[in-house]
Length: 333
Image (cartoon, rainbow, N blue to C red; front, side):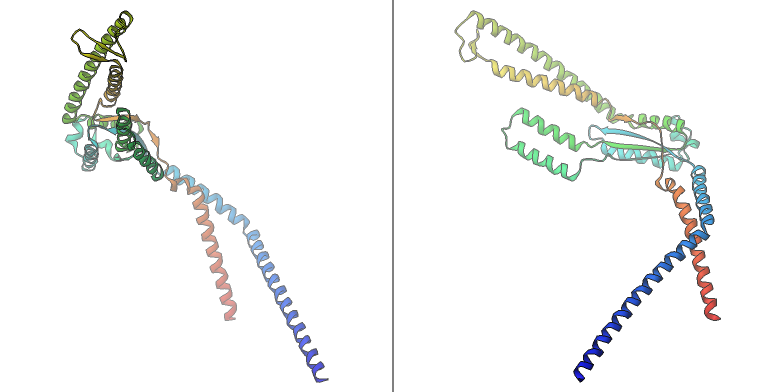
C-alpha cells in the first residue's frame, strides 16, 4: 500500500512540473507578444515624427552635398621610356613641392598663374597590374619556353614578355576645382615633364640609331632579294645545283634557306624598330590623356542615407532616456 501511494505522489509531482513548464512557456510567449505590440504601438504613435526626421535628414544630406565644393581630376596614363621611371616620380614630386611653396618664378616661366593653383594637386602611382595568380602562370610559361631550343623566335617571345611585365604603366592624376584651367594646366605640366634636355638628347640619339638600323635592314633585304632572284634564274637554266645550293663564280656556296631565315629576321627587326620609334618619341609616352571628371567621394554619396539614420538614432536615444527617467520616478514613488 505504501509503495502504491508513493508511486501516485511521484506521478502527481511530474504532472505539476509539466504544467508549470507549459505555464512558463505560455507566459514567455505572452511577454514576447506584448513586447512586439509595444514596439508596434511605439512606431504607430511616433510615425509622423519619424517620417519628418527621415525627410529632414535626407534634405540635410542633399543640401550638404550641394554646399561642399566639388573637385575635378584628370588622369593621364603614361609609359616611362629609357629608364625614366625614377625621373617621372622625381619631377612629379618637384611640381607638387613647387605648388605647395607657391613658387611664383617657376610657374611664371611655364605661363601658369600661381593664384589659380590653390587647390591644385598632382600625384603619380603605378597602374594596377596583373593578379598574383596570373603572374605565377606567366612565370611557368616562361620557364616552359626555356626548355626549347635557343632559337631567335623563342628569344623574341621571352624578351617581349619580360619587357611587357617590367615596363609597368603609370597613372598621373591632377586634382583641381576649375575644369577649364585644370585641364589646361595639366597639359602644360605634361609638356614640362617631357621637356628634360637630357632625355630629349637620348631620344634623339635613339631615333637616329633606329632609323639607321631600319635603312641598313632595308638595304640588306634588297640585296638578299637580288641573290634569291639570281638563284632562281640559275635554277631554271642550270641543273647542276643540288640540295638547295648553287656554286657562284667565286666558288662560294649560297645557302638559300638560310637567306630566307635572315631576310625574315631583318624584316621582324625592322617592324620592331618602327614600333619602338612610335612608342619612344618622348621620354614619357602618353598612352591616354583623360578628360576632366568629377570626384564623387563615397561619404558624399551616403549623406542622403546617413543623416536620416543619425536623426532617427538621436530620437530613439531620447525616447529611451525618457523611458528610463519614467521608470526611475515610478520606483521612487
